[in-house]
Image (tube, rainbow, N blue to C red; front, side, top):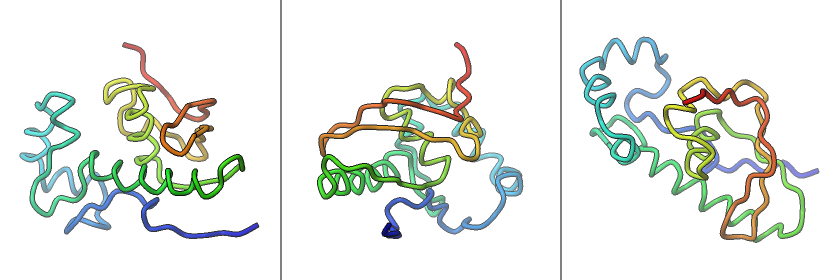
Length: 136
């Protein structure tokens, strides 16, 4: 079995805040988070503050591009991709499995999995495990 590391599958970049814990970061940037929390869901995906890291849209752009490359290279084969829960959460939201309210931060548990199929362009969810989805 070959193991191939791909930087495009890594977790979100937090820019100059890389490596800081969420709690410390939230305290330091409370004004930023207060503003962000008031944005409509669609604007949150594209909101970007200088040096604050990747937006959801930027994250999904690199992630989905790499998934499509892998899908085409291994068409008809089973491939295991390991990534961060935040990436999985954004991916599920992008595929319409939920939204920011039904899949809040922390809703992807350790060892969660998403089984998908792809034709090299689109992705189809077949099974989701270890994801705690909130009811509306």
